[in-house]
Amino acid sequence: MDLSVPFFLLLAAIATTTVKATDHIVGGNKGWNPGINYTLWANNQTFYAGDYISFRYQKTQYNVFLVNQTGYDNCTIEGAFGNWTSGKDFIMLNKTQRYYFICGTGGCLNGMKVSVVVHPLPSSPPMSAVAAEHSSSKESAAPMAARGFGALLVTSFAIFGLTLCGLVWI
Image (tube, rainbow, N blue to C red; front, side, top):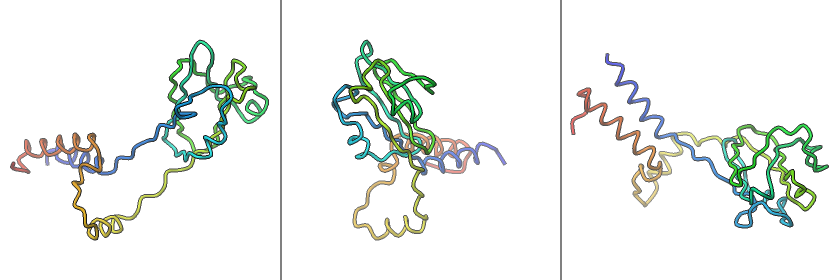
């Protein structure tokens, strides 16, 4: 058997299970600046493993440090785990844990600190539940629209590959 067939079938399967990460912009449209209640902002967000937290600020004035709880509580960067200075920093939250971020240029003392708790990804519903939901739905949305452009692209390549192998005729 040609190995390209299982490869394309695998790509098609992956396309149906894509998960999108969320980019949480700290402070929303107010960005990373002094005098903002970031605790309130964080409490209105739900962070999952694989999501991003992004900081937008004037790079000549502020920065971002990933610290431990002591650094967070005392506004110190000693022993920091990470440091970003671009003004548009995207940080992947890849572990289920509490993260502590502060500004290391003195802004922390003016409220520029945020702590977020990252949760594991929620479990997917069983396929039978998904099928039941779709069969009882009155709307007939195209499945590709729900999966996004990446899934459409992968599926197109899979169909193209299967056509080349002579398994699908268009």
